Length: 411
Image (cartoon, rainbow, N blue to C red):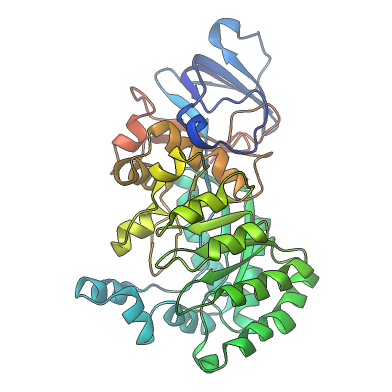
């Protein structure tokens, strides 16, 4: 199957050679081709360039993109879309003045979601989750990471991971799975956190390895949740089973979790709403990708990741949704890109780089998706007719997507 996109007003995020990620001042550069063509063969990008140089192709389908732009689909490297029910009651509690921590202390938060998930069958959980996955694909997401962490028992955590695996087998979008059993301490282990961590290591990790249920291991390194020592313990255990580290860190407090991430060569450190100068210095010249989650800051009314300070210091940055029932009940990457520009003072070029190639890197998918590069999957966004790609974040309340393509096929 050969598909030719012709008369593309602007082909965005063009990379002749595969790059791992973009950092610092380079993030202000977004390579594009105006009045371009793009050829897709059997789901893979096979050729692109200026329309004036477009060879004569024998193709199965021609898509005239006059007035429209094409860019790689969004790469969302941090989600929790496999969950049960919702937490809209807590949303009202926050409006009435309760903090995220206060809600958690009275049995809400992650423990609330865990209780609902434990009571939900695997089939039901799959049905709820596939609706969310299809929704985010329609909003332009073409690669996604999904975490466990709302189970908090052996059975429920494995149930979540098996649902993620089923989604992976059912849908053509690249999906990465992350084991986040250390998301919170269950009520039954309130006074014995170490016993819970040991349970994850002794009972859950061997099954994950046996059934090939996860790519990454994660932990919520935060005051009131898991300490630096806990983080080191769980990452050490994950490495024994070949799971690459990621960390939820610096969301409310800086407790040296970023240093642990770098020490363990974590693929990403995520949240980073609270960043000290030393945290920024620690991340310099490493392979660990900082990931910002601006819609979480928006929803919880907490500080935003200091993107400007980090980028000006030469760091890379990825953007993701954190789609989850408690702190970010939205998987709209278009809103994330817009919010990064509006609230974090990122340029459109920086935000698009962060949401495509850097997001792909944060999932270990930079060789497969995230840029217009020959040999990569043709997971694409075809925009509506727009004046410039700056209109994508400018029109923050409306996405500018006309059609989504996964592996070159209209979705």
